[in-house]
Amino acid sequence: MSDTKMIEEDKQAVYSGDHCLSCTSCMANCPVMAASLEYRGPKLVAPAHGRMHFSQDDYEDSLDFCSNCKSCDRACPSGVAVSTLNMLMRGEYYRHHPHSKRDDMLAHGERMAKLVSAIPFGSTFANLGTKVGGALGVLSAMGIAGQRSMPSYASKTFYRQFKDIKQPKSDKKVLFYPGCSINYNEPHIGIAFVKVMNHNGYEVLVDEGMNCCGSPLVVTGYLDEAKEHADNNVSRILKWKEQGIPVVVCCTSCSLMLRAEYAELFGEQRMEDAAENIYDAFEFLEELMSKGELKTDFKRVDKKLIYHVPCHLKTQGIGTPAVSVLKQVPGVEVELADAGCCGISGNYGFKKEKYDISMKIGEKLFERIKESTADDVICDCPTCRMQIKHGTQTDPCHPIEILEEAYR
Ligand code: SF4
Ligand code: SF4
Image (tube, rainbow, N blue to C red):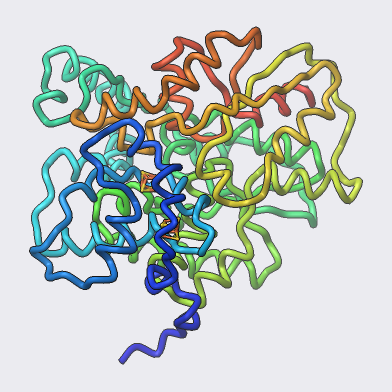
């Protein structure tokens, strides 16, 4: 028997289905249920099915429709970790059934990105390959939505660019976790974060031994691999915690995974301990602001912004710290899109059979953005930004880019 200390049983997400009151609040708030008649909905799938302990072959087919957006968890008055129960059941199913090649590819973005970044001109060839593959219908034949563009690889990863930054030495340090998206696809966001922290007197460290948070693995049913990622990342986060160095994250799905989903999925006490050392970037900056320690030597930025709050930020229960901070910048106006889930949910909207559902969910947000008079769209989640770009032909940026501009 393992000597790993577990969270007390009555606090573990895996047993939370027993608290279900059948109120249907989760169903009323599930965006997939509203967009598709094929999904039976969170109440029937997670707490009801999960509690019956059916055999491994007695799979609830419609479970495949859950996007892990976590709107149900937020709506539940009884603390049922509905989405986590779904992910645990999905993971259990795939312990005994094969994955498709498409799902293998979507789940293992980090594996592919590492290969691409290790080869000279790898990003150029890979970007060309996905464009040609898309045009020839190869990706569509694999089960990827042909309407989507796959994210492009940057020519130089964030970790490589980070090595060239000359930072001021400081006793105040943070560990920046870029996640796969910033490291391989959008390193400029990580660079903007480093500049903002340096401006505030912090030295930024990185830990290249941390790996993908595991979110794409969890949603695609690779639970055992996700546990390996969690074990490695948690050990490293705890080491930083021992040294008093907080781990700060710019991607809201990564931060949710590190600070909440590991403990919910796997129930280990050390995962909850590590979670105490994880901060969303703007949560950290807002805390500096409340202590009077945030630099306010902003230049004027005359911009009206519309902000889409990612579902995975809402689930963290920390409000909208980017709004509080950006409102301090002279000339900046921020309005909330307040139009629900964008619909993409990580790799969900890239699946051919989920594309229409994903776009239907996003309709309200797309309309809201198209009607807005804002100059720019801001959002902290990389896949939400992709969905907004796809549905509105705008070019959303991360809120940290606006703050970095204000400090220039
Ligand atoms: S996680 Fe999202 S899609 Fe899945 S059941 Fe909950 S609300 Fe519905
Ligand atoms: S919202 Fe919670 S208590 Fe209500 S039906 Fe859904 S899981 Fe059960």
